[in-house]
Length: 220
Image 1 (tube, rainbow, N blue to C red):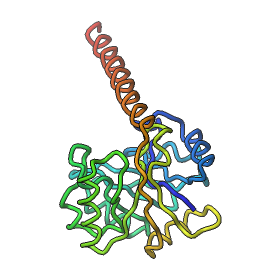
Image 2 (image 1 turned 90 degrees about the vertical axis):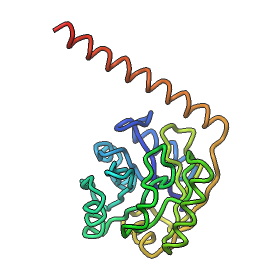
Image 3 (image 1 turned 90 degrees about the horizontal axis):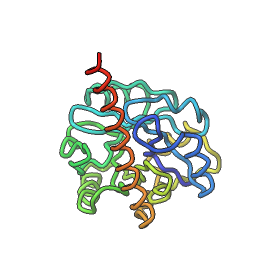
């Protein structure tokens, strides 16, 4: 089984509906965890089809938590790790050494995570290499994920698990047992172009929305 454990929908800063992403990934033979920023709202649209998760913005940076239920995690990092451990969830820092994208950096050494994201398709090569070394030093399983915000990025990284059918608890148990193999592939030129296009499109949309709110406030 191929599974990408770090994917975003339009419930945070991704471009597409969760169901569209699931169906698109299925055509490539890939299952997903839905890990929108600080929200679980999109999971109800694809319940039973994805691993429920969140990419949580802590005081040091981003940490992903995956559970077999709709997660409602705290944002303080020590409390988040305790929450994950107490509820039998999986926690891993996303792009930990990509400090321009809110990686937690050397804080990876201070908390008891389940795994580390050692390949993020959007992170610089050096950042991924530092993450790989940290995983070795901490004796933690490494994960490879697309961190997809557009459909073209799906397939740029995933993990292989020896399972025949999709089952959330079975997938999480494989992670706990370290029975997972990261498969880093890298972004295609098409994916890179669509990532850049979506970044600009979303920025313009946000500026337009913000400007409209400001003008409305000024008018009142």
